[in-house]
Image 1: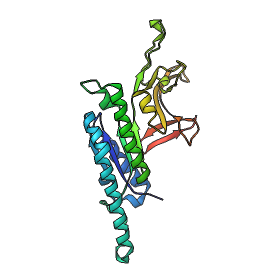
Image 2: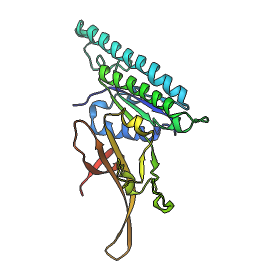
Image 3: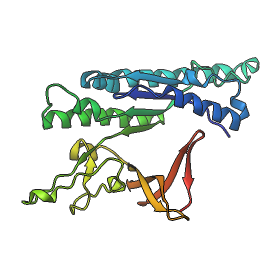
Length: 255
């Protein structure tokens, strides 16, 4: 069963990965023949947000209006289709102008806060994060859509008196996945502090690193490894898995 809906991608850092998106389109059309005749790109809506003011305005005002208008349009279109059997065709329920939005991605939520020329105070940042979070949660609840906010990480600096207690760790180090809350075991932590941690419902951490092993002929073999870990969630247990990225999307790896 294939469920066709729309998606919104809000970019705050690098340009949108168009090449990768069309690579996935090609793969999905091979896997699902019913998608062959569809213009899948018409239902992926991309917007670039380069500063905090723009991000706040889009997330709190423009985004809810756009998503709700799509849902209302879908409802009206479905009612009209039911009243006339002649409209019940392959395009009737999935018209490109009426598909509801079911996925919203913000990549990343932290970049505008960290890139401001004038540093924003902690109380103001907390207020802005809470307002955006409330708006996104309300939208997700009422419009039945998933919201994914990609965050960044920061080095964790120990409060110990010894300067040597701080050990910088590269982002691609496997220990980058150790977002330990307390205990001083982790060296990288999510950005935006406790304010954002209290806003989210689920946290999933991703890690990538190069593992060097000894090959059959005693040579050094380098392998790229990626892991995904549920840090906390109200309906899932803490768990971790390894995956790889292919032209078909992401695939689990048996370890």
